[in-house]
Length: 154
Image (tube, rainbow, N blue to C red; front, side, top):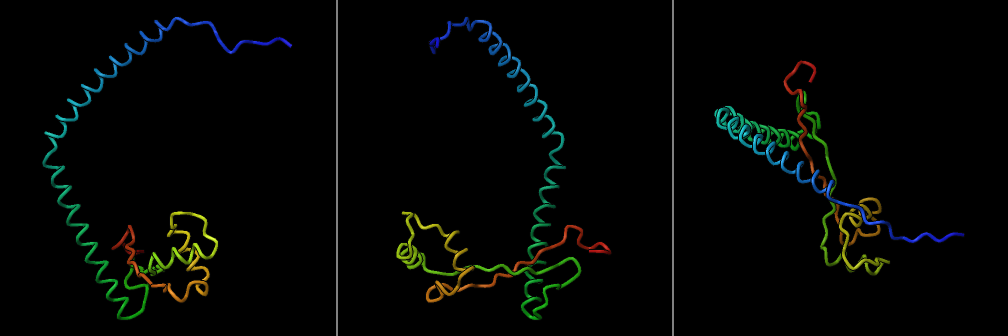
């Protein structure tokens, strides 16, 4: 069996260096052109950009208000379908004292030095009897607005 050395012949890197230098220069020129064009575009489209940002802020406020009112209607009626295109989904959240949960986790076979809240919360929700003396599961309603809200079939 012939042994091959792990060393190879030294290659002349000059052509590769020249290619990288050339491409870096081309990229730099292209980036400069792009930056100039983008700055010009921003300048010419400032009104549209500002208008869109203002409408987006108004939309977010209106959606937040609608979600709040939808949650209030759900609280009053218990009906999850509060209006066409608006559905209430109820998530569950574990509520607990982190120190107590960490101590419990270590006492019940936890080997990690850092408390993993996601794993613990999944365990608490899946097996509430294990942690019922210090964990409560809370319902958290969330109003979901359909993308096509306001259309006939929403």
